[in-house]
Length: 124
Image (cartoon, rainbow, N blue to C red; front, side, top):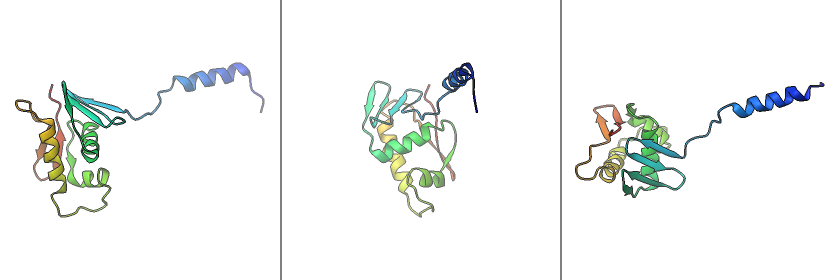
């Protein structure tokens, strides 16, 4: 079907103005920052030495600041389990992550929600 060149140019310009749905590669919540591509993290001026699973767990929580995330969701999204194993796997990883995130005198970022899961609260 024939078209007018000006109409084609207008359509292309409209497409270019649309926001691109690109997942962020650097996540920030309060003083906490992680680089998903580089696999690095920082809290304030302090570098964090994060293992790949810890980075994935932290990224999942950082994409939902202030929201309660259930253990079942963490098993499904971070570990790719489609069932809830009877283990303390998540508690061990969260405990390890807390020790890396919280230096002496710094407020805690990850909080337990008893019987449900965890929430990440910004520190500022």
